[in-house]
Image (cartoon, rainbow, N blue to C red; front, side, top):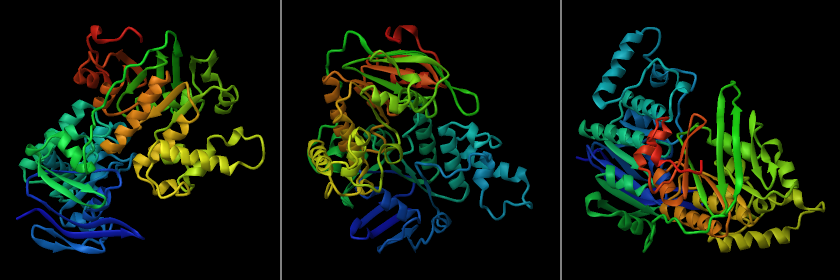
Length: 509
């Protein structure tokens, strides 16, 4: 008997058919990877399994018994729990309080020691090691993810759905998570894992279910396929997904020189601690670090959004750290920023492609009314040049897939012909096809002599794409290394604040 069986599940949103007649079986004690392009219907599908969406038609069976979920609580009661990419936890509460939050029995009449014993029994069974008294805001991303997993296990989940669980983990944290998942599998749990990292699919899964355009595209045994065959199955044809570092002549002098850059957060703690590095034209300098290591502050300080405590960032003979974003623009400094938050800082979700393209040059218009014809022409050119899939340039950007949203944002910035480009997490949540498109766009800019600062989280991609890799931890640079000469394990250790052999470090720090 299967742990989970889905028959002919269909879900629509207005006139959009998100899932069309999806059928799937999840065996007891197996790890099933769910693959698909952005917009293929993966999230819609698992949200129905988790009780967040209700299907228009189709059936769901748990242990052979038909179930209907009207809420996530119905799903967890039936043994199905989901760990979302963005955690559903309360930062000011302890791990214990988060795990037991909402439990009716966990009131004044239940002794704290009883709860500790029950949760620690789960920890011992599956190999977790979380201090239940610690507050969430004191924990790393990996620890918070562990709390989420323990929480749904505590609630009785036997079927777990993990959405991009390794997106922000170091290689060592990913390895530890996979060890836990294997132990859960040995104890009879069934797991669906959504990930765009094909190497992880090959490492952790027993079978792979592929979705394409809201429909089943295939179900294969992992042992019988390769990364390339999965990519072809996912995209419906031949595809070369390999990340390539292109050769480009590095400029003789640096485009950007950063000296002694330091800043403090709202609590008075240093968020950037004496950063020193150079960036050259025709190179991609990657930035690797666990979440909250200072990546956001680095981006914001170089773009005039954050006032710093000390330091210089010399670009075209100007210290950017002493200028506001408007002053930087008035000086004609072409420094283009593709932010981490695409629909928050980068684009206006409710506006169409044309309007979002026009926003970039709004303050440069010398007359009261903007030239919408000119804006439409530029939007059309960006859509065609960067192969953006959209019904129209007048389509709201919120209706686009993640990959197409990223191409609109990056394409708009590239049309400004930058000399210095900051790109934060451009591949986050993108499938291999969309990722390949973005990589090609960055490599073309590199060949034109653009200096690129690339903040990323996928170590494999950073090592394959970047000329040098700057590893930061707790606001400090642990080293600037040659990714071709430095192991992924050492990079992971540096991300966690450890030291690596000096001969691995690059001399351009």
